[in-house]
Structures are given as C-alpha cells and as structure tokens.
Picture 1 (tube, rainbow, N blue to C red):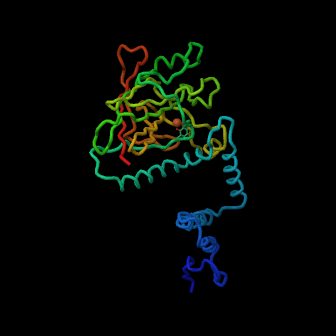
Picture 2 (cartoon, helix red, strand yellow):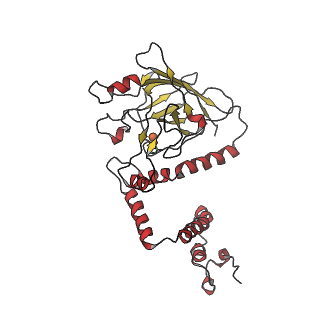
Picture 3 (cartoon, helix red, strand yellow):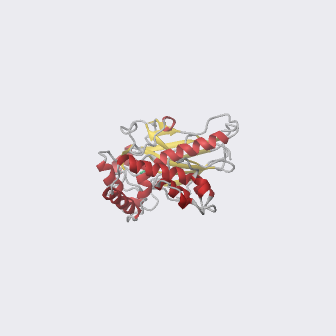
Length: 309
Ligand code: MBD
Ligand code: FE
C-alpha cells in the first residue's frame, strides 16, 4: 500500500517504508520543529522537488544557480541587497506584499474609505532620513556644477497632501511621511559618491490638519543595478532592467498600520513594464504645472489613507 501518511511516521519506524525522497525529506522534520516552519516546509519541499523533476535539473545547472545566489549574498561596495533584488525581478517581493495586504484587509474592521495600496520597499531604503519642516526640499546642496543641475531645475516638484484614517476618513496629525527617490542620473544617494549624504531623502510630520508638504524632483526611469548577479540574470532572460520613475514612501501614524508604498509618474514610458512588477493603478500620479513658484515647476496633491491597527 503506497498511501502512507508520512507525518505519522516522523520518528522511529519510517525506515521500514519505501518512501520517495521527497516524502523522506518532509518526514525528517521533528516533532519540536518551529511551528510555522513545520507548517510550510512540506509545501516548499514538494514544490522544489517537483520543479527539479519537471525541468530535469542537472548538477551543472544547480551549481550555476548556487553560484548566482552566493554572488547575490556577497555585499557590494554600495551595500546594495542583491538577494532582495533577485526576488524583486522574480516578482516575489511584490507577491508577498500582495499576500500580506490581502491577509490584513480580510481581518480589518469596517472602513469609510479604502486604504492606499502598498508597494514593495525595494533595496535602497535608509532609516533615519533627516526630519525636515513641511515646505522644505529634500534636494540637498544643489550647485550649478552638478551634472544634472538643469534637470533638477525643470523637474523640481512640490508634493503635498494629507494623511487620513480609513476608518473615519479624518486627517491624522503627527503622522510621519518618510520619502526617498533617485537623482536624475537614476542613482540613489548611497549608490553615488557625487551626491551628498541623505540627498533626496527626508521625513515630514503632518500638522494639526494632517497635512504634509515638501519639494523634490519628478522621478525618472532608471535601470536597477545591472552590473552584478541580478543584472547578469536579467541579461540571460533577455529582459530590460528599467523601473518607471517612482517615489518611495513609508507613512506611519499612531494607532495605524505603517504603509510602505511608491507613486509612479504617469508620463513614464516604463509604467506598464516595471522590471520589478510594483506598479498599481491607484499609485499612478499626474504632476501638473505649478505657476509662480521658482522652487517647484510641478505640483502634485496626494493623500495617504492608513488602516487602523
Ligand atoms: C529600486 O529602486 C526599487 O525601488 C526596487 C523595488 C528594486 C530595485 C530598485
Ligand atoms: Fe526605488
């Protein structure tokens, strides 16, 4: 009889049975295993083994894959996280973000407005960005000698809005809007020695009316780092490395669930083919011309709606 419940065999007498390799690996988990791991490992092992059998994975191919993963784990000089980047180009960070959002929304109580959709964090977040007063700029020490000085003038933008609670639609004072994006050369500050420390990063606190405002730049499309293992992998897949122009946010407030998200500039040619699959319709924004403000040629009003905890 081949129908054996392998879970009941963990322990003494499983060697008596002719289990397949897959079943043996699953059955090897002991009774005191970490509960969540005990729950998920049978599925992981089954899918992993089924995959290898389905594609007839050879030792050479497996060795190449191990080398790719090992290379991702070796920290590059700009502290980039290539393991995360590898997950991103496989759509995995977006998938787990989606799964997490679905789990949370099914348990959340009645709300009067729908929360702002989340989007992936990405590998370039830095904590402790400068706390800045509303109405100031995250563009630091910009001088005419900067190679992208002209672009920074023509793409200077003012972003303002409210942070609201989905349960009441009321504004939330003292919420923190943590923002970061790349320079017009497509590089985040920590990737680019020519940018000042914490350039294009800042944290703003909403006022009594739940409002925040700051100056930044309209975001540009740029390739995710393609000089390392993730880039090598993309090339082997004949895929482009570009992300549409985007601005990252982490919005947090007392008694509310922290929102990690991104907004995407509607004008961007890569909006429908993000290399890391993070674009959602509700996160696509339209900057409009701003009159009479030399600090910002473009304007955007955007509200963030947070779910209560
Ligand atoms: C990025 O800038 C980014 O936001 C993500 C998610 C992945 C790679 C580079
Ligand atoms: Fe990014």
